[in-house]
Length: 374
Ligand SMILES: Nc1ncnc2c1ncn2[C@@H]1O[C@H](COP(=O)(O)OP(=O)(O)OP(=O)(O)O)[C@@H](O)[C@H]1O
Ligand code: SF4
Ligand SMILES: [Mg+2]
Image (spheres, rainbow, N blue to C red):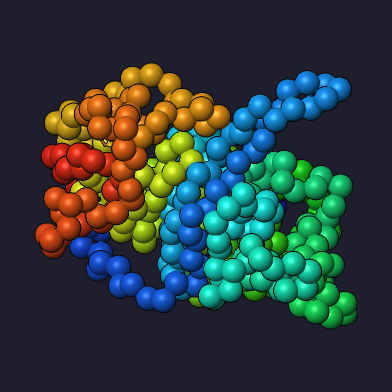
């Protein structure tokens, strides 16, 4: 277990103990759609592939993100999951304007952020902040915690008058469960969990409405993960935040998310409420991913069918025609190579009420037996 102490003296103020993440209750109320704060449509990011040293020629493109659409509603958490390289971080960088898209739109409260520049873009960026994965490398080791957490005020001086900054930073440390007296200490004096709290405090400094968290707990020990996830949930309630929460750990995403999007090779292949995706997945890729999730009850685990995916994820520089998942899908037919399945409620479920009624990009979408035991 990773220690969350600082030279034996520092204590986080909301230690919840080393509990594993509790399962979300299946009886949780279904999600009520509200107007979106963020509308992402047809988002594309291609990185050019070049060859040659003297004369650089374009020889293709890595299609990191290739037509991603989703809504984020006020106060909700949208989880994004998928294997390494499927484009999760690229989506995060596009949504926070750290990268410019090749195509598509990102509307924040109705305004297309991709068309903004200068002051207008800066104002929007203030409201959409990023929390990064690795608390070991994302904090500058030569800066004090006070300077790190207060850095956003250098970029947005209007957010806190100079004389106010130290007090604001101390407040932020307090809010994330760190001792405000540690403002002059350096990142190496903190444990991984505490460093991630510092990263979250920095993300909160400008009082954003949206936080995009890219694998915020993946580098942490499991017991510390639960504390940081619980902290993020508390802050969400306290500040009315909306989250895009990215992770490859399906259990963590289930715990925190209201809705979940499953990504494969630059696309979302299935999206729905936490219950729809985890208990009623209709896309073969989601079903395979979920069948591999370890379950707490070994007896229940033995009863379910484990779907082992054959082969490697194809290169995003040369994705398969039609359905991108077809080279690993046990249900693939000739139609799958020819026709790309749209991300929509499958025809078979279009008129049916119930949890299978959610978008799934598969020509042969169907419910399997429950893959995740209750
Ligand atoms: N700046 C870049 N230039 C070229 N290719 C890139 C660049 N950034 C990402 N890629 C490629 O785009 C694809 C998607 O990468 P991305 O980092 O978004 O995936 P990810 O889902 O976040 O993966 P991981 O789970 O490993 O973090 C990968 O094939 C990656 O190699
Ligand atoms: S469209 Fe075909 S290849 Fe793609 S997931 Fe469905 S069955 Fe598999
Ligand atoms: Mg990533």
